[in-house]
Image 1: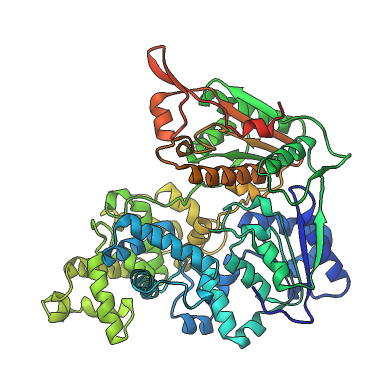
Image 2: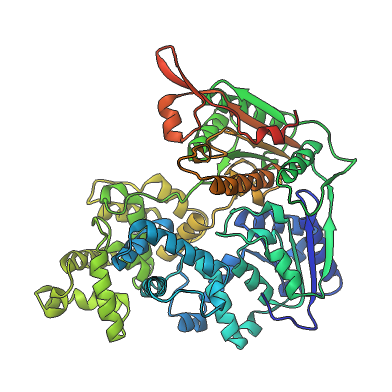
Length: 632
C-alpha cells in the first residue's frame, strides 16, 4: 500500500466502538505539537465531512489555536485538491470535477452505445468501480481481453472526454499521479499523518493517506464497523495490510468501552453475532447503566410524535441540541421527523439522505433543478466540459448519446476537446449542412442546445446572487418559473461572495460533501452518517423490517441464500456502527401498523394485512436486529 521507509514511525490502533480511538489520535497530535512539531506539517484524515468537523472541534478543545494549523480533511477532498493543480491536470487531462449522480447518468447513457445489455453493463461498471477503489489495476492483467477491456477503455474514454471523475476513481488517479511524479509527492508530503476510521476508507484512499507521511503515520479503526458511510467500497482488510506493509509498526488494541452500558452491551452482542470477533469490548465501571429506551408506536405518525416528545424531554433536562442526533432510514422519515421537531419548537438541521438534486434527465420538466445547476456551472466556467455534455443532452430520450459518441470519435481523431468540438459543430458553416454536422446523427439538437447555452451565459454572466439564480431559472424553464427552486437556494446561498463561481462551488460542496453547520440544532441524519458523530443522545427511528433489513432480504425469490447472508452481515455492521455512537443515551423507535399503499411505496416487510376502519392496514414488525440491541 505504501513504500516503506526506515525513518517512518508507524502505529496501528484497533478497538471497538467507544474505546477511545479518536481520542488516542487527538492525544497523539497534542503530543507532537508539545514536542515542537509544526501543526502545518500535520494532516488528519477522517472518513466523512461530518467526522472532519467533529475531529477539528475536539482537537481545538485539546490544543487550542494550534489546531488551526492542522489540516483535517477527507481523502476525497485531499485528492481533488491534488488533481486540481496545474501539473496534475496536465498529467491526467481532466479537471477536478466530481460527477454528481445526475451528471453520472449522462456517462452511463454514453456507455450504452457499447451494445452490452443494460444489466450486464451495470454489473461490469460496478466491477470497474470496485477494482479502481481497491487498486486492482496495479496488476496489468486485471482485465480479461475482449469485452471487459473494450468496455473499460470506453468508460475511461468517456470520462476523459468529459474531463471529469466518478467518486470511486478519484483516489485511484491521485495515487497513480503521486507514484509517477516524485516531485509532486515530495511537495505534498507531511511529516505526521493520522487516519481515523481507517476501515471506512477505500483501499485507494488508505494508500493515498499513507503516501503523504514522511516521519510518522498513525491509523485507527474498527474492522467490524466497515460500512459505506461516505466512500464506496470501504476496505476493512486495510488494517491488516497496514501491518503487512509496515512490519515494524507498533500495535495497540483498545478494549474498554467508555460509552453507556446499553451501548456497550448492544455493540458486544452485535459483534458476537458474526462469530468473527478479534477482540472484545469491556465495559467501563464509570459509564451509566441501563438498557436502551424502546419506543413502540402504533403507526408512523405516532412514532414521529413520540420521537419529538423524547427529544423535547432531553432538551428540557439540559442536553444541548448539538449533542442530540436523530437517525432516519430514508428521506420520508427525515422530513416527517423534522416537521414534528419543528412543531415542538426544536431547532433542527437535516442532512439529506441522497443527492438533493435529482430527476429524469430525459424530461426537461422533471429535472429543472439539475438543469439550473448545470447552467450555473456554465456561467461560472464557460469551459466546463462536463457541464456542456450534460447541457446538450437534457430532454432527449437517449440524452443524445449517439451524437456524442460520434462527436467524441471525431474530436479525439483531431486532437480536440469536447468544448472545441461543440464550437466547431455549431459554426454557421456546419449548421447550414456541412459534412461535419451531417455525419453526426441528431447534431441539430446538440447545436441548438449549445447555442442556447452560449446565449444563457451571455445574458447572465454579469449577474450575481439571487438575481443570477432567478434569471437562470426563468431561462431554463422558458419563463414558467419566476423564482429559483428552494433546493437550489439552500445549496447556493450563504455567507460569503455571491459571484457565479462562488455559487457554483458552494452548490457542489453542499451537494457532494454535505455536513452539519448549526451547532445549536438537533441533527437529523441518515443511518449511515451517524458513523461520523458521537452524540450524547441518539434516537434511531424507523427500526423495522423493510427499512433494516430491506424487504428483499426476506424474499427468497429475489435474494438467494448466499446473498442473504452477505446482506445480513452488512446490516449487522451497519447497526453496530450506528448504535455504537450513543455516548450516554440510546433510544430506538419502531411502529406497528401502516396503510397498505404507504407500505408498498416505502418497501416495508409486510407481516399481515387486515381491514381496519375500511382501510387495508399492514402489520409491521420491529427490525430483526432489535433483539440484539435490547437484551431480552
